[in-house]
Image 1 (cartoon, rainbow, N blue to C red):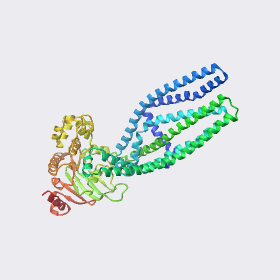
Image 2: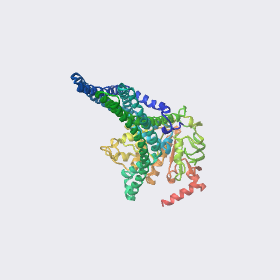
Image 3: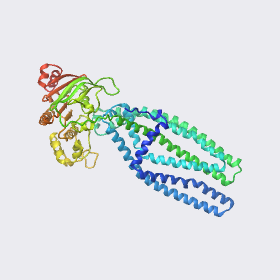
Image 4: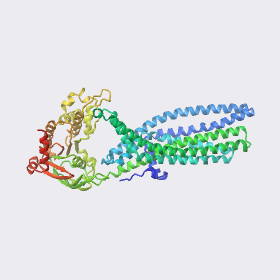
Length: 601
């Protein structure tokens, strides 16, 4: 795994390879647009700098009564103004088009990188979430990156011209550029310090956003109002925001004071230089005007260049390193497994002395688990909350590798099977399902992406999930837009969303492993029991391929039809057997079954 190195702890030379990656990515996406933007930015610098010369011509012409100089200066000013306007308009149009295309490129790249990681560790570890949270915020600004880069080069070109003009008056005036060095130094240092603070308090920012969403969006709206937690959520959100902003603001003020001091030093040098030209060099009025205009231009160019450098230092360098970390992390997670998934299961899946603790913790969620899931069987996994049921499912789906031990598929180590190939032979529905607000056809069809618009396949999946009645009740059937926030969209209940997610899990007709991780938690026990009976019957009809159906539920009464029941308790498998066998033993399963049964009497 690639270890992330914070930009605050590095320097520019170390960051150059990361920055170069972004340049190559942008150039591959939009080579002609980038070249056009660069050319227009470079051309735009020339007429801007020539303004000082036209003003000198006009000044000297007025003082010396030289009409030709006045006319030439005026024509030059008009030409410069016209060229500046024309190039600004042309560059603006090219830049808008370029930014739109680059924005799509960078956002798609970050999304693809996150989606390509076989595990889901980066979605669950707080330290990774903080890094990704900052990167997701930055990626929306990356479309400005090349415009900022080209602008910086343009300002540097202007600076060079301005220094040449000042040096033409007297070589010592070129030293004004030295006075800008502290400004550039502070501009490079300031984002570095501020980014350290941004990441340190990123969790407060995430919390504030989370609480704001909870207090202002529809899904939690009813509970918030009934419980009367509006004020508490608002206060906690404000507290999190104040903690985030307090540290960020303090750091910004501290760095701003250093920047003000650097500018004060430059301003003192500029005033001294102009005074020296006016009184110490016996200069002509035109020369004084040139010094004033070139000096003021130098100041403006330094200001603009520093602003762009601050953006580049704070966004480009920092986001480049974060993006490079994500690229390296995604590449490191590709474990090189090349064995294809089997066409059918003959013996089944076996967990051999499997232990697992989530990264960053020492507490085992599964501890020395040995269990066999026979080919062609329906296996129920039960246990109290926190017993490790969902974690076991994650391991079967290769979302995480075991901390120790191994999982075998027909005797072959699951770690040696290509994750994409293995997941292509899996299907399932999960308790934390996605609410995909598309047309119902697509919402279900994405369970098997190549057939996402196949109405026959989608209809069959809806039938297997027992969601026919739900679809029939939708205004336009499978063509109904889901989600009230869209034009013509309809709102559906949590249970209806869950049924649609279940249908999506049934899109693949012949999976080797079908995982149903509490897919009916929003339904009543009787309905869930009937559906599980239906699922078990369907699973046995597909047993010829060796399909293993894994049912995860906290309701013991709904899984009694399973061929094998695995009971988890305290990270351990404490019992395995049929319903009748486990009841006969009078152990953990029997006790919990009786407790739940009593609750329904």
